[in-house]
Image (cartoon, rainbow, N blue to C red; front, top):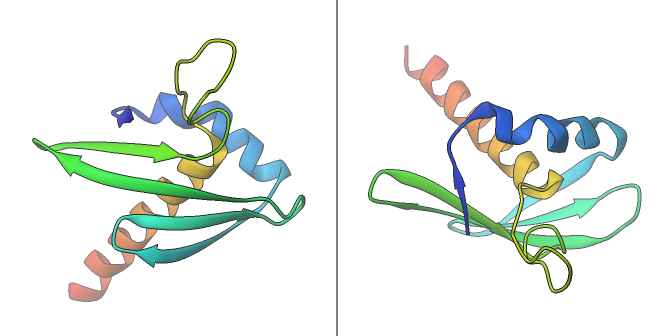
Length: 97
């Protein structure tokens, strides 16, 4: 699991999002299907809150490494979901005012 703390975690992943657009679909509460529109690959991103902290996981190689470093990092799929959820939250706040 990756603890989501700072915007700086997402800078590289957000840059990659500009090159490869993603499609996000909510599968169930806290679970999203993210499809890379350029490559057609689909990954599952799960978000959760524990003790006031937000965590996320992704089924891609960066989010669940099977070789090499073996340390999960923020990937473009998780970044896309976090940006999406923040935008939804901002729209809901604006609509309630």
